[in-house]
Image (cartoon, rainbow, N blue to C red; front, top):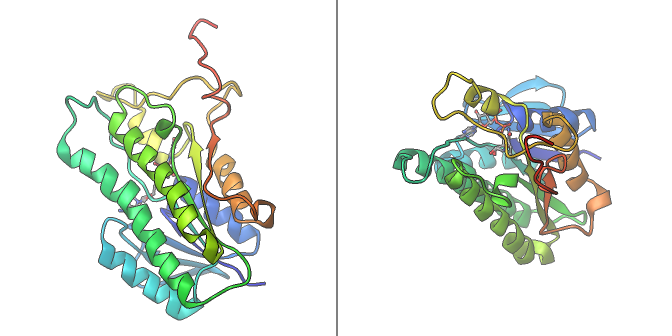
Length: 250
Ligand SMILES: NC(=O)c1ccc[n+]([C@@H]2O[C@H](COP(=O)([O-])OP(=O)(O)OC[C@H]3O[C@@H](n4cnc5c(N)ncnc54)[C@H](O)[C@@H]3O)[C@@H](O)[C@H]2O)c1
């Protein structure tokens, strides 16, 4: 069976790992990213790359029109495109606050909206799937990261409501909520010489930060038949970080 998945933010990190894992699982993968070219290019058998700026609704509409023309409606969408802006709420700049909401929350919603409209135009007996990449920050916020946590909490809320709204149409909507994942997003912000650098959301009981593939594996679960009766959920992928706070001296 030829299944089509569209992945945003697929040029890096979690989105890239999801693209690799789903490609290996025989999906046809359309990778979207602001870093890709405007023309759809073939990277490999069943692997395509296309420019999409999720902050721009016209760019999203154009990308989904190209995808639908070429492949028909996608079977699944993974929304991983995102940016990180940190800072205390009293001090951070409006442009940084806006970037978080425009890319991470509104961008994911617009992509889901475009995918659902394409899915509605072409019915399927098998469930369709949407997976948002939320964050543990949206469940257990931390100081210095309030705007990011708030917009991820908004994304988690959208997950539940959208799941209820489109469940009757056979579309499942879920979210993963990773703790710290070793990706370029975090590496860029973790330089100890940087003012206002990124700090992890606590110590993982598993003794390591997540790899991108730790998260991609759970995304694959949400795209498989094992999760046919799972929708509206937000699943922490945090190595138990949220389970209990581990004091520094422990
Ligand atoms: N890395 C972590 O610790 C962590 C933890 C929890 C949640 N997340 C979330 O995971 C998702 C992926 O993050 P990552 O760690 O893989 O980061 P990353 O920086 O490695 O990858 C993000 C990708 O999104 C793309 N992107 C950014 N703005 C875009 C736009 N406007 N349109 C299209 N693409 C755009 C980037 O070009 C990049 O390829 C994000 O939503 C992030 O908030 C990350």
